[in-house]
Length: 138
Image (cartoon, rainbow, N blue to C red):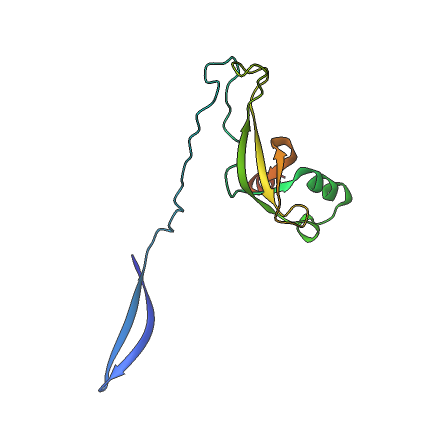
């Protein structure tokens, strides 16, 4: 613990200093994990974990690439969104087995100027952490 001086007080000619304690470690936000049970756990296709997590900040790849081509500052032109919902799509014709590998969809609000939830595939989004790590490589 470290101490920070808040104020100096003098009472009947005797100086006194008031301190406030501050933790040394920055608190790490609590992480909550959700589990899901796949409909077809023993099928030939594996279930990959989602690329993005709930509340992660993302941008639309299409907008990002356009700004890169035009050399615009992305953050002046477009918004950053947060993942509001996750859904796994399991493709089955018979209800007994998968005919295609399952994939994740990500719900984002506000992409069309409304609060409506719009769904996107993984390849349509890019996370801010991914962009920042790309910027640091160059």
